[in-house]
Image (spheres, rainbow, N blue to C red):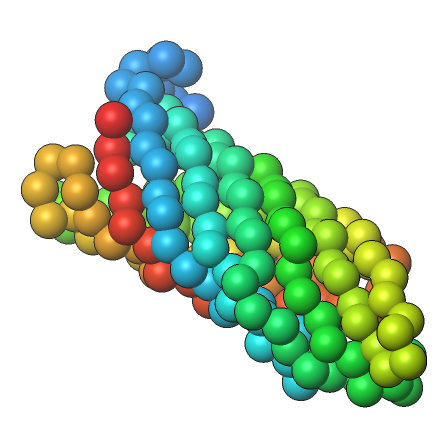
Length: 179
C-alpha cells in the first residue's frame, strides 16, 4: 500500500510539473509563506499543531516548500500496549509542489516530500521517552487568494513512516501570504 501511494503521488507530480519544464527555469519565481494549524491523526490519536511553511514558486505550475510544525496538545493512545500520552515536539519536511491554476485566484495543488517527527511519550509510573520518526509524505489541497497577496489554503497529507506503523493523516488550514 505504501508503494502504491508513493507511486501515485510521484506520477501526479510528474504530470503537474511537465508544463513547468517547458518554461524558462527562472521565469516568474515568487515566494510565499503560510501560518496555520493542523490535525495529526495517527489511528486512535489526534494531535494539534501550529504549522508554518516557506516556499518558492517557479512559474505557474511548479514549486518547492519547507514545513515546520510544533504540537500544542497531547493525545492519549496505546503505545506498545500501554496507555500513554503522546505529544508532538516538532515536525519538519521538504516538498516538491505541483500547482494547477483553476481560476485566476485559485489553485489546486499536489505535493510529495520527506519529513521527520519528534514525539514525546509519557507512560504510567513516570516513564517517558522520545520517539523520532522519518516519513515519506504525499498530499493534495487547494488555495484561494482574496487579492494579489493574501489567501487561505487547506490540504491533506498522508505521512507514511519508514520504520514503524505510525502513519498519519494530516489535515491543515492556513493563511497564505505571497511575497
